[in-house]
Length: 177
Image 1 (tube, rainbow, N blue to C red):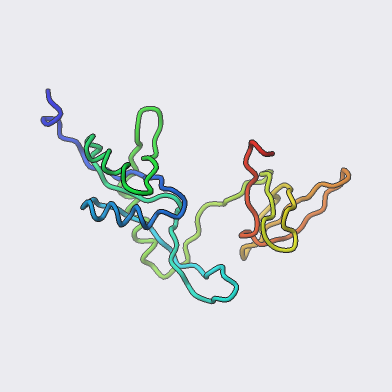
Image 2: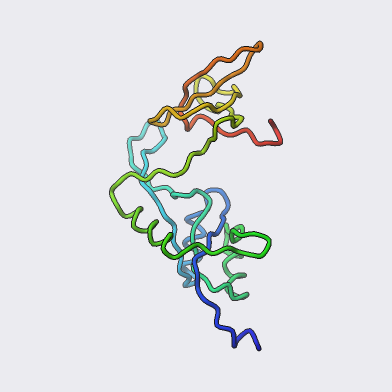
């Protein structure tokens, strides 16, 4: 049996992209006539001097591409400027259910706000990277709503908790904590 006699089925796969390259990869795949989906949501601009609503990827660093994983097409996908790899396991790329992608398409065209999963889990080591507490490392405690989080800072064997903007906090990589 040859490769040409095998009928490969088309499925949706998640494509990991370089940071902030989602649109570049999206456009590159469209130019290659591939079916691609980049879910975007409207959020308020983080720039202090702007009150604009801007469109940002729902899943930063990822988009969806429909392919049958034919070797030629697979190579064309991953050699697109900004593409990193198709998400999967040791056996190869893992497909995403069609209904999950269709549900995402419905969500992003609605006018309702869409929120994604939490960035932080209780106990994560975090660092405040902006604002008056910049440079402080601590432990994530909880979400307070409206983009606010509580971080515990340990000093002299005691804990002090501060409430800061979620956007001002980043996870400390495991190798640094």
